[in-house]
Length: 219
Image (cartoon, rainbow, N blue to C red):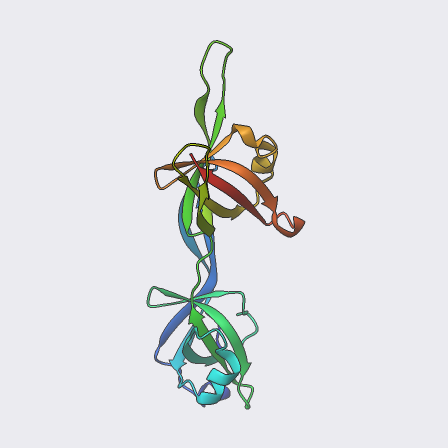
């Protein structure tokens, strides 16, 4: 638990509205590498008091209209803006941390938490296991994902009624294992909410080995 080491300063302010936890949210995987459940990994705790959000706070920090809470805690450099805060089992993102004028406490501005990779997809291999067999779907990996874009496109066929093909772009965490498999997109299928998709393209976003985007079309 993070507290001030100066006992005289601790008496100046009492933070008794509750105890907040801060840390990260980890995407869970089982022993086979398949996505399971998300886990909050706590770094530490802080006693806090609620503080009023002022008009100048909104003008300064609420450009995305997501600011929902402002709390005051003892001053510590252990909590950072990329941490996730948990209060009463509700998660928040940190918008800004502002030390008080007396340098004893700090104000933490909290936004509604935006969860990354909140859904799951199953990535399948579609290939012929032997020359005498039809192609089969086999499981490669269940992965966390976000739906980046979803559209319906009309295809016109000669002398036929137009049909709709749903296109969807998934974002998933980068994986070297999957990147190798995606080199042969003809053999990859995606299952999402009981629907099957073929992969038209994949992109290692910004070549950063952080996020892969899969452009898919419903089968």
